[in-house]
Length: 445
Ligand SMILES: Cc1ncc(COP(=O)(O)O)c(C=O)c1O
Image (cartoon, rainbow, N blue to C red; front, side, top):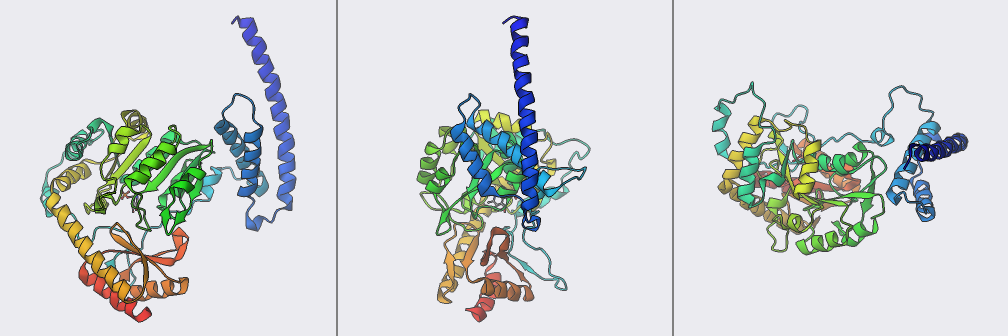
């Protein structure tokens, strides 16, 4: 193409862009007028109206821009529109999605006036880590040196233990960070992320952080429905999060379910299978290895040292994916995101599988005992395959039990932040802890 031809085409683009700016100005005037009619105390965003506009535009668009591009452009306009309607003149402007984030609170960790508490609110491992990690606390680290840039020694140990490839492992500051890497790598403002309606609390937060829109998949009896995930897929879908087992419900999808789902999902959509509680599941139909990563280039499996390994405090998680995806995640990962101490302790914990067996057995025994007690007292619980139990009550009863337990120095989780205020999630603790809980539940049955 000659320079002259190129200039002519660019002039045409300039003319069109000028017209688009005029149209956007016209549109913003109408948007402002609509804003004056809205009751701002109820908020100005009408998601169903936005969806209606998007559906119409996707249907209409005949050009060569992809449908997800059309959706992204209009979501940008929606964001600008809501700012106009809110009359937001602040100098410090953020993404619309960030403003609506409810900061992650987690389970409470202290009770005023009580020194001795039983904390069963965050699904930590109450039995703690392997004793073997205590000796290296005195180990002399070269603390003036940066840690290994991507933790190759730990990654090699993980690879050996799980019979996988170290190059495909990416370490995270807790698996939370691995979940974030996935969204940062694959989602832009205006894209869509699918997760279960009552999936892990971080999924909607991460979606908002990257400016994506959460699409909620329905559950049947608190288990996410594969069909509902597929129904939520649109041209704007970039990522799907599935906690397997799920927090807070404890349900899981079988390997067959997962394979069926991933086979149906277009292969440009990243499917994150969050295995924070993977080690706890002992059912034969559970996907406990990493073979789905071999089969599907678009799958990321996450794991953590925070749960069964009893090392929530050191913040060490990791994920496994195809080499192509791992290379992308590594571009987003900060160079020294996990520290030398955490890498070292995780390695020692990994090697003490006898301790892991003990933790799993004790968790299983105490969970079975507790579930039997719940049945005896006629409490309704959903079978959980992790290290916690999910109980369904009325909101009033859930309130009363949670406060009564608190008075007794026991912290559990009433699931208000999961929009399940009528449900309680109780981490499995020692048998003594569980007996204390039963004695309180006894009074409320
Ligand atoms: C389902 C699920 N995924 C991920 C995490 C994050 O764990 P961490 O960042 O400690 O690895 C949690 C923590 O509770 C969780 O429940």
